[in-house]
Image 1: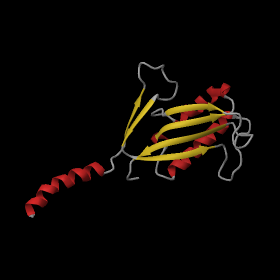
Image 2 (image 1 turned 45 degrees about the vertical axis):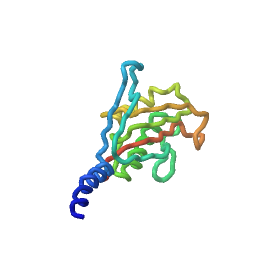
Image 3 (image 1 turned 90 degrees about the vertical axis):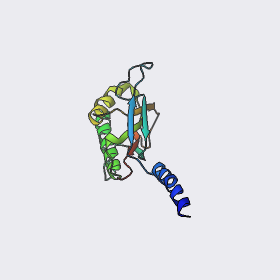
Image 4 (image 1 turned 180 degrees about the vertical axis):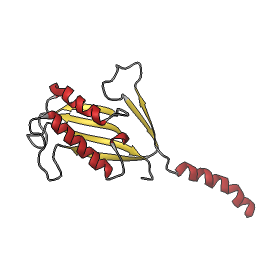
Length: 155
């Protein structure tokens, strides 16, 4: 009986190690076979960690008041501030973001968005999608951003 237990013990350790949560390993990839990205990564590969899905954030302050009526840069800053607040609730920062989806009512002013985005993503550029929409939840909103982040499971 003892011999059988001793034989099973290494199997138990292997199974336990395979189930253990690991600190995430994140790789940002931009293959040479694709065009050079402007402020985003073509591929973000994640192994391990805990995934956070952040709902689309809009340019409302904590009291629900619009910030930056008619001003895309001001609205974009507020959206990123809201994203930071949402991530902070789970122990994350914008450095943990691996993917964003941006919804804009007019992509002709994309440079204004990029100027603000690049002040928030200073270490790594997440994978990114940009979609022009005819309208957001309120007619005075110009931008909405949702995010996916990956953090250490211990946090």
